[in-house]
Image: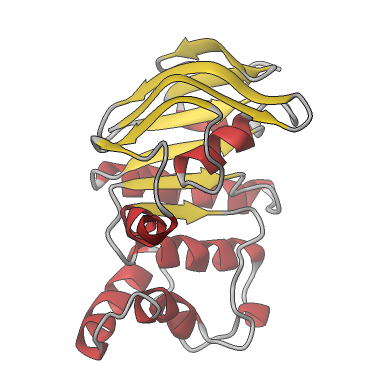
Length: 226
């Protein structure tokens, strides 16, 4: 599903983002990619959804070599990869329903499909009773669930969650982690990028630790230790 072959990302003048990464994530896995700030885990996430391009090496997503992906193909790639960020990135003047629907509208989905998909997605993230509310009327955890719902509208094979609990308290963080686990059980591959030790240890899945741009450990069912 996801394969990095000797991947490096070097920023000018000579700053190492990641160095010589070799990584294989199977379809349907839930993988936590962890490390302290500045170790390279966010660079890895950006390489996954083509916000950054590697300096060296090969990146494959679902058998598709995205190493030198053309700009025109990035939107197609991102329909296969859902992405959730720490800061939600919601449209403040649109309702919950409209925020989720917008991801389909920009992809040119017909109105009938939008009317079918959006309620189903809002049910998955347990917001079907708040679809007419605006982001300012929601808690932080609810706003993150809207963002997750928006990421699911294209039925992505992969969901990348980049510090999804960074702005949340412990209770809301647990709810988001449980939701990601639920989505994974549907068959979606989940790559969680985080420095939140408690959340990683809560789910007890595969843990890949990044230090100084390199993989220092890769443990199945492991724990994250600072």
